[in-house]
Each structure stands twice: as C-alpha cells, then as structure tokens.
Amino acid sequence: MRGRCACGWRGTSRYPIDWKKVREDDDPDAYDTSGPYTEWEAHLDELAERAVTLPEDLAALLGQVRERLDRMWLEDDTARGYATMLRACGELEAIVAQVGPEAAQVLGREHDEATDAIAEALGTTEKAARARLRHYEHLTWN
Image 1 (tube, rainbow, N blue to C red):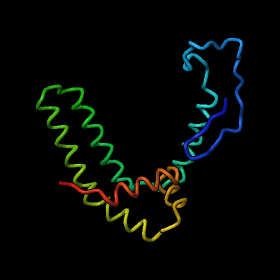
Image 2 (image 1 turned 180 degrees about the horizontal axis):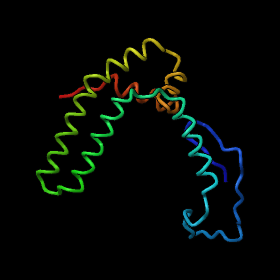
Image 3 (image 1 turned 135 degrees about the horizontal axis):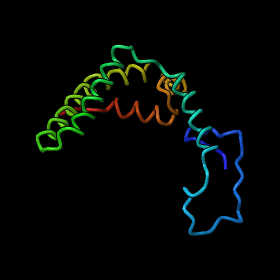
C-alpha cells in the first residue's frame, strides 16, 4: 500500500500486504492502514501550512459560531432548537452569498491561469480550487 491524494500526490513509503491473509470477504478496514494514512495526513498538513491564514479575529468568530451551534445541537433537541440552528445556517449562507461571488470573480480574473497559486492559497488541489471558484462565482441567495 501507498498513501495517495486526489491532487496526485503519492506517498514515498510502501507498506506490504500479507496476501496469504487476504480473503475476498475481508473488510478493507481489517488491515492496518496507519502507515499510508499517516503520510497522507502529513501531506494535508503541508497543504494547510501553505494556505492563507485567516485573521485571528475572524478565525475566533467562526470558532465561536461553530462551538455555539455544537452546544445547541447537544442542549436543545426540540423543533424550535433545530429551527434556530437552521435559521443560523441561513444567516451564514446569506453572508457567503454576499461575499463569495465577488471574491471568486476578482480572484479568478486576477489569476486567470494561476490555479496552482489559488489552490495553494486555499490549501487544496487545483481541481478543488477551480470547483470552489465556479461554485462561488455563480452563487445566489434568495
């Protein structure tokens, strides 16, 4: 086995499979995949380190929103609680729909063919970066 990623990255180490122990009905999760998985996680960490950093105050606010919604999920399992969570999601979507399209259009215009730089800034693959740009460029909110 070797670790791999959707971006085309391949792990350098090989992890042997004992084919004598493999049966057709075996669950793939029955095998120790920790080696390739650890390499893949390190690859993701490297991508994240090269990505743009959110301003501290914005990261803190987003963290607070996530924590508050998580608490609501645990503390209020009534229809009103779920409606409140859904309303909060609607508010977040409205913000994204207001900011996302313009940011994606400007970024796409200024870096027309530099999707590798955009991908690195977003901490993702080029394919995922292009998909994210397309998603936000055409996003609307009713």
